[in-house]
Amino acid sequence: MECEVNDMTQPLIEFWYEFASTYSYLLAMLIEALAAEAGVNIAWRPFLLGPIFHAQGWTSSPFNLYPAKGRYMVRDLERIATERGLRFALPTPFPQNSVAAARLAIAGCEEGWVARFTRAVYAVQFADGAGIADRGALGTILTSLRLDSGRLLSRIEEPQIKDRLKQQTAEAQARSIFGAPSFIVGDELFWGDDRLEQAVAWARRT
Amino acid sequence: MECEVNDMTQPLIEFWYEFASTYSYLLAMLIEALAAEAGVNIAWRPFLLGPIFHAQGWTSSPFNLYPAKGRYMVRDLERIATERGLRFALPTPFPQNSVAAARLAIAGCEEGWVARFTRAVYAVQFADGAGIADRGALGTILTSLRLDSGRLLSRIEEPQIKDRLKQQTAEAQARSIFGAPSFIVGDELFWGDDRLEQAVAWARRT
Image (tube, rainbow over all chains, first blue to last red; front, side, top):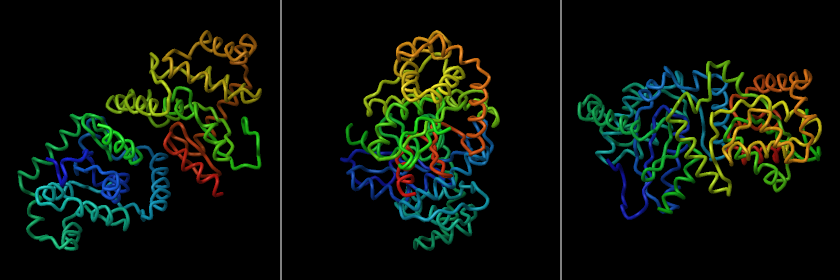
């Protein structure tokens, strides 16, 4: 599924993201502008990190499991957000359950609104520091985008949507993704907010 | 201990590094040139990550504990090294026991040769992919720097040197360091090879 790719003649970067991931937020807000400037295309690839973390024995976010790392992450994000003109606030609890948001993003891939939905979910969660786990919050986001929240919230339980998210998560794992955000150019994997530039350079070279 | 700081009128960046750390290698080879260009001073701060990893329940490098991350790290380092005109090879076993090298670096802090010793140890370990754990390898490195390897190898067992390394490692932990390389400017912590630029900007602003 090459989600929201407009121009197949340009080099392609797959943007793999997890809604509960703070560093994915930083990227998601700016990636389309950066990609357009660089003349590359972005394929939006929402997936779930939970099953991948579970498979390596983690029961929560590494930022909760390793408190020094978690405290650093907050400070690091505050600094970077300020530098990029973004706000940053952590929701409670962190991480938020992101399954419903990710299923909606799969629907957005089919229907052509995944990019703006993704940015809206991240803004609510990490600029406002509000929850995105429940249908109430997601319905408000969909409505703010002038999408039909009643119809779309019912898609969350569609077996086909559930299956596509599971497949996408399995594909992430099969392609060696272990964190988010990740970028893939061909077979080349790049991990972390600070690796977009490298991924862009790689995409332009190949 | 402000190790190898020449000009106390310039802003200061503490460079905290672990000899077994691959990403510290990338930084160590270039940090003095980058700092000189930016008009900041570097304080070399060797420490041991082992006790810090142990305290959070890790028995080896996270790159061994999490194989997908380990495979990614090698590829990431190969790409970055190529970009920076450096070679990269992983020694066997990885990580190398770095205690003797770190104790020698403490001696180098006292005697004024820590920077060139650090670069030489990293070059042997991660450009040539050779071991740095034993006294034979370290003696060869010291000799190549025209240092008195006989006298210095005996310093590895000096109680005062051992204590200073322990203190420095305890200080790293107390100041919330959880990985390497780390940079500290005042009370501000930056983690990772890709955060030097931010640390430099912070140092120049304060």
